[in-house]
Length: 385
Figure 1 (cartoon, rainbow, N blue to C red):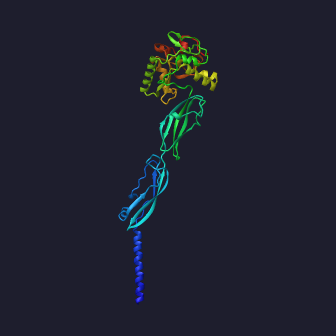
Figure 2 (figure 1 turned 90 degrees about the horizontal axis):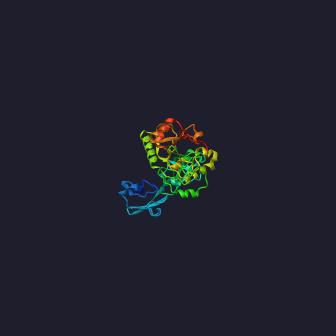
């Protein structure tokens, strides 16, 4: 009987110890989170509340979260991309405990464009190696690169083409955005640009060209420049203030009436500049084709400072019906004529250019009312060279 009591007592003691041990074990603090993710570029910040429950925090002491193994970027207050294992130590009832947490730093943020041109104008005859870098910039915490997808761009034919711009960072994040590449018949000179070439310098740098006269040719007070009547290489009047004021007034009035017209336009071009344009076109298309849409140096109305090419608000030369019709009907009210109308190539020597206006002042209304080209109105020769 005594032996039986001893056995029962021993079993009871074991049960008590087991229950106590289990209770003690179950009451041990338990990390509620072991894994933490942080975005690259942000400092690591982990508090005790992130790791333990409020109940556990009442029972532990000497809690330390060791982040010393985390490596920061040079001269930065945030860590490098990577995985880190960090030690967590604490004590309960004077018994030390050690655990660990996993910290992952990753870059999931796409680069941003700090500079982006929706329309890029490039000269005819460029190729896939054209340097677009001045039009686009991307920013990111890591190094970035920009790729230009030019597969849809036809560098040998004028027009608007789509190009995809892809900016990527070191960790594979990327952003794509589409722009328009405008391959132009002529590289436009903005109304705000100034020429840096002096007349003498222009003449010295050019190859010999056949210019009809040494002085501008006038008929009824109108300066005539066409394929029969040219300008000397040293003729460089720059911009014409009166004509410039009138073209800006015309543009402002169109804009106020809701027409899609740009404030930017192509105006004065030097002999030297026109020579470069024309020679590029000849190299790309041959002289016969180039002569249909580009003037030889010394034969461009733009050299007078009295000719202007208007642009659509999207940057292209104006060819859309509402704008073209308004210009044709109202340009004379501002002293301009549409210089190269449709169906008159044999007279003017050029393909139709509804965007090309020539300032003739007070005589514009009479020329408009006549329905004639400038050559026909003045009774002078035109056509080819």
